[in-house]
Image (tube, rainbow, N blue to C red; front, side, top):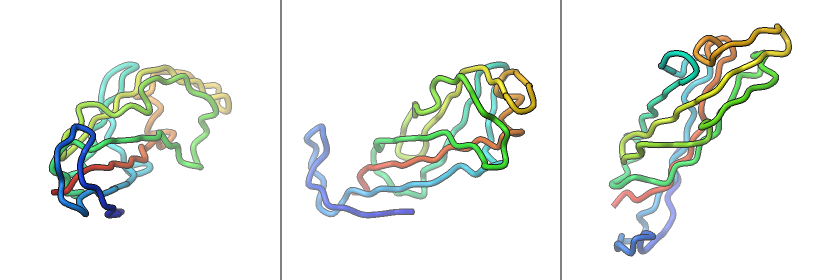
Length: 129
């Protein structure tokens, strides 16, 4: 989804003609998010090239689990942290250990992410001109 708003400059003082600010949002896909990485570290690169930003936007993220997943508790860090942000993409890294109270399973997230269908909701706010 893309929403345009008006702005006459960015926080660094660079001028941008109005309207030039855009909000773009999406989800990486429940059950289809392409997590990678060994052990207790998971990485994800999110493509935002369709948003049309000319500079790195401000990104917010939220880790989401499918309603069909059984995960009841997780100890994770980095799940709400976007990094390596450019106008075309950003990264998300999960670091942690999971314990599933329902099936009494525990392990590293790379084993359980597909099983619990984790995805990332994201919102980007940036300039398009």
